[in-house]
Length: 359
Image 1: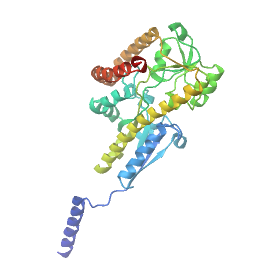
Image 2: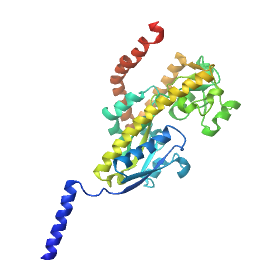
Image 3: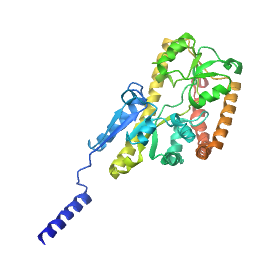
Image 4: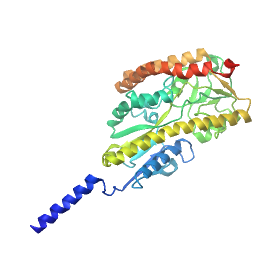
């Protein structure tokens, strides 16, 4: 009887501690692999920032160790490493894995698509996040928006583009879906490693290079060689992502799941802000030190052909993948709604209050 009383007493103590929240927090140690090297800012900062928030909100009990690509040596292997449980988390971009599932492509960005604020609204209030989870569920993973570069530029060109004929035979580094579109217009598309791009542009191995925006382009030095800087059409709101192994996530206490989601959302939006600041600062430096740079918009006939090629490629992918079609239909429907407001709130504001109009 004495043993039974002690057992019951112990159980009551455990229940009391649990119900009053005084139980010691579970110690959790995770590892995260990212596609980026340690100096590729702001991409490389985002996972570190997320891990710092998790550590602080958990009083140091939930620690996420971040490994850059120079540590794990597999920058485009993040998907498989997280899926197989080699890492609990990853920081990468979904369009790198379109070969595994073409439906991953529009979860990053699409040419002629949403800007970063529009896409964030779609993710969190327009059903985008639910579609993201549905796409990754069959792979045993969760995915969350992981930071946005903002509107990326259309590239650095050594020659001015005045017509479609100027694209015929042009040699350009431009990857992914945008590269497929450029190829349809007669561009010879190549994918040279980042470390060789400056030399390739300098020696004329390529005539044009697409990277991101001034904030990341400035360290590559393209502006020292190519003076035509074309505005974007290809990646209007490139969203990277956090991947999480679902089995490991399900092991977490509910408190840690909430902390992780808060940290992810905060760090992702901070990357967007940081990208904006870096682009603004770098552009000021570029135009001051290299005043010959000319910011150009692609001619209307070129943009129309790009859009036609885009529409044809999307139609073919929609026939190939019901999930791709489902995501694209959702994005188009949301863009039909939100773009009116973007036009009124941003475009018309900028147009009506520009310095030239107010002089």
